[in-house]
Image (cartoon, rainbow, N blue to C red; front, side, top):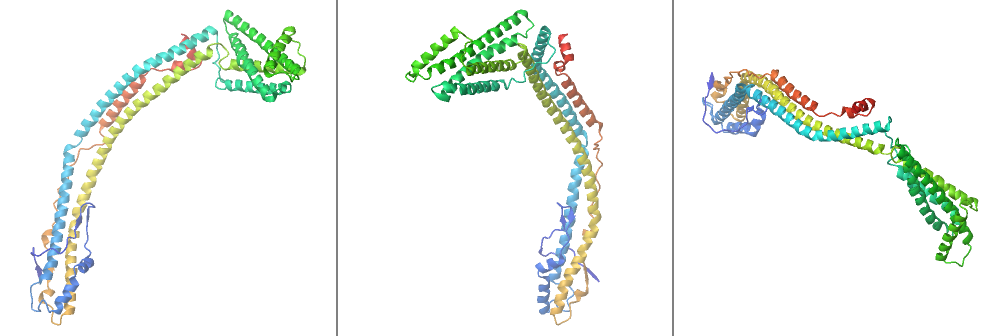
Length: 488
């Protein structure tokens, strides 16, 4: 005979859940642990020693009722939790299914309109800025083309030593000062340091002033203009004459020092005056009348350093006068424009990329919702399928816990077991009924909706047209074809 006790009214023993909604899984009861933590066996032994329940009892005692009540309540709570979970999932998916693609289509089309407008507006703003820089660059390259045509120049401007020529100049002055000072030290009463100071000043005049005059005059001789060319040769001639006379004067200066350095009775100021007067007198009497070989070597070193310095003055820019400056102006304007247009195109690309990513995010959301719809449907169906099997386990739990109580009670008592120990107690059968699951309406989510492609194409076309509308500087590229186009 089975005894079915429905809804006994006793207090709960524990709140161990039968369903975990967060993990979407049923929670099995650890019967041994539950028996241990709630003292079921201890209660059975205690009652058995007291011969309770009596042997003739045919109704369950309080402990039996507590166990049965708890198992029934746990099963019903599990049933309610699962039902509530399924209702929530259905409600969520029903809302999404009702909304469908309409809100997404509206949002994506709005992104298309915003993207096209923003790209177009950005292009108009950029063109107003780029037009001025383009005009400056084109004017600079047109001036360069006109300069080349007028000077009949076919080569590219050369000023590779523009950043290093001055170091050569400083080196030349230093080398000349040291080399000549070594030759002057023997006749200088102040020794090597005194000679170095004098020759350093001589080197500045020689390489810094005379070299500059010869170098710049040399540059002018390359001009196609006859008057400018003649003027350049005149400057070179003047510079070369000055170089020769100056270095001969330096040679006479050494001869004068050699003649008067032994006069120890002279003071420093008197020595300076004597050197100056004697040097000028020697130079006027015979510019080429240097007395010692070392004086000729000193003059020759000065001439050589001056010529070398003049070559470096020439190479500080292109050999043709003005060509380097006009070429640099064109190149700098061209580079400024290229940097500006690169920045503008990068900004435009950022706008384009932002809108494309937003559209693809919407497509991903559609795919996620579509996949979520399928996943949750399958999950819910699986939960419903598992429910009867999971809830039938509650009968096994009840039998196991009652058996633990009975076993300890029978061991401890000396009289016969109560009559109801031989009866079969069952759980409430209502909780075995699976929760109602009606399924979820099919959604119209379609990640293959052609609107995504159309919207991307519209934004891409606006991006392409805006970029194509930027002024181009292809004609400013160096090369014969570019120059010919600029001339036309």
